[in-house]
Image (tube, rainbow, N blue to C red; front, side, top):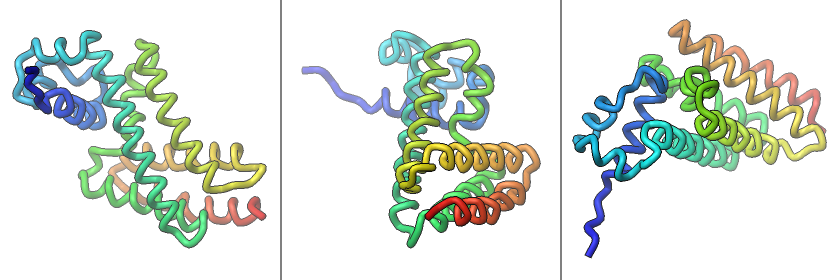
Length: 187
């Protein structure tokens, strides 16, 4: 009988957290296996493609988790504009709670490694597309695709500025501007 362990999932979770905070290149294999308390060979057992495969899968997992959170926040809001404001506030609160270590779970890796690895670039692109789809679906208008791009780009830019400045003001500043834009554009 094959013994089942949670080592693979623990590696994904640890990698997602380390890549989120440090980026791809700043996270070493020894650090990844040490975070899980596993031998180095287990990384290659679970991820024959090595660090690149682990990163791509961890990015997909992080993107899926945030996508689920976006759906939940949107579903619990009285309207789409309030839902987007709630997303901005949730991201700002998360950034503050992490002492500005955890911004967008994709951005650090996307900026760091997507030019070096097609698998990582594609995982990041798929993550952003999934978030875009959630926003566009929530907007539900013929302008949804365009407006979802504006919303996602504004939030991503606000997160980057907030993380860099160690101040959530830039992120929180976009919420009223998104509200004004969406109220003007939506039926």
